[in-house]
Length: 136
Image 1 (spheres, rainbow, N blue to C red):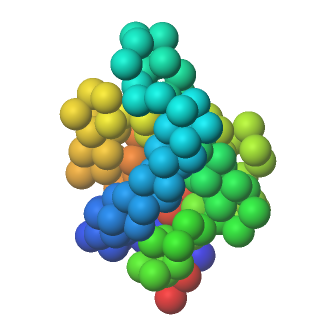
Image 2: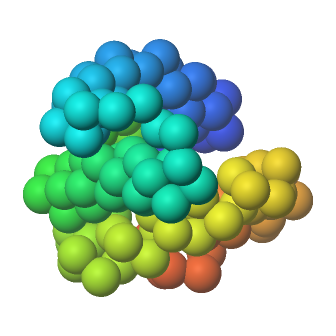
């Protein structure tokens, strides 16, 4: 299997952000409708943020574990898998999500790592042992 190039991987990230906007909008609407209140207290605000992160985690972990692709990854013909090509376990997919989230909080440092890595892998993929393959 051939490793995916950097441009399609970054393009997939941008497309993913666009696709997740309505998902997060609906999740926020459901939360606010169920709580019957705007996020006014610090505690409720924290629960709201955890809810949105949970929705994202479920989306990514499910997609990466079940088929190795999110909708954006399918569009750009990219698949995440272990080094041997097998599907990620739920634990590996969750670790990949959490490490990618941590990377984003550091101004995307783990994603920029792809420019210096010898195999052009993102840092979270390097740490988890996953790879992004081209499906073309």
